[in-house]
Length: 417
Ligand SMILES: Cc1cc2nc3c(=O)[nH]c(=O)nc-3n(C[C@H](O)[C@H](O)[C@H](O)COP(=O)(O)OP(=O)(O)OC[C@H]3O[C@@H](n4cnc5c(N)ncnc54)[C@H](O)[C@@H]3O)c2cc1C
Image (cartoon, rainbow, N blue to C red):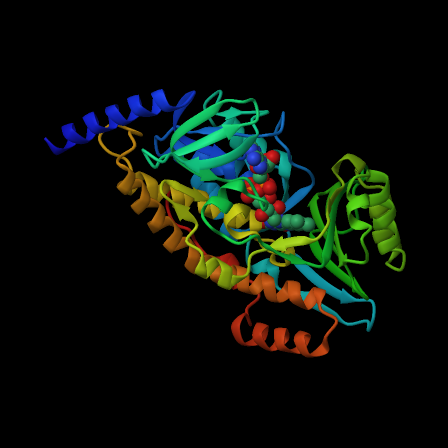
């Protein structure tokens, strides 16, 4: 009896929504990056169909991405880990070197699985596992609001149409429009520039399976072998002047900036940067991040709208966890959603209250995890950015007290889908 009532209520609601706008969808995901595609796939594996709106004309992904054990566990739940493992060799050791004082230290990563996969391989395999037409390209979401009558979300698209949805999950990255609706503050800005790309060595490279971090002055270079003839690298450097914006628009200027940054580095690093794959050069002017207290104090849900990936927890790249955390979000969100928000037949969405409860459960579980991740990555980011010896010392003390085991976060298991 109760179920019947709920269904007829839903049907009425659907009718109302059809009258109110151009189109109606059950679950809409805004953004087709790692987070949006992983969320769509996780929901699909639980029998829930969704529509992903991506503003670009094709999938956008450049360079490599380090995936730690926790990310591999999430990829296993999504059913794509074994394919991706074939595309990227494991990293077996790590070394940090300072060119300022000659200090060398082992980075003890060999205890956990760490591989650097091509971002294109990752997003392609996620997309290929989705039903046809799940992702709609060239669909820019201009704004979102809650319908004053039904309280369900209404999306305004650039092509002039309106889309009514029962559920919206914002996976639209660090400048998320969907996060704004939840009342979250804009992310903070770290005065550090990031460049990344990869270099192909037709006859094989000489870095072996070792992850290298090399530092000189305010420049840090990371070298991560992907396969025997492909290496992913990144450069981080303090923000210098207002030139950043101009640089980001031109691959030639990004290249000049990169070669200038590594001019005092060993010849293997200079060659690697000089011979990089230009089309994959990616420049981040400023690094944006959410502080742990911002994560703690924001609800990140309004009605049946929530967020995932960088839209929820943009973090500095110094622990290489933004992408893996987005994969974990997908697994946890789909698990909570299937458990709390689905009624009757497969994928049939329950009442507004059920969806809200599902999202609250998801956010509660994720916040505990994200507090630690964002705290650690913020501290490392501050150490990179600051010129103050006192702040640096404070960060070091906090790191030693709270994060003595630098890789503890990689042992996290987001659980079964
Ligand atoms: C220099 C650097 C190095 C990094 N290295 C690592 C690493 O090694 N390992 C790791 O795990 N993480 C790393 N990260 C972090 C990682 O890249 C991000 O956490 C991850 O890409 C976030 O994925 P996302 O899908 O949430 O966001 P995004 O990748 O930003 O995707 C958002 C998508 O939404 C779309 N979109 C945006 N707005 C709209 C709209 N209005 N309408 C429709 N579509 C929209 C965009 O086109 C995009 O496709 C690094 C980050 C940086 C800056």
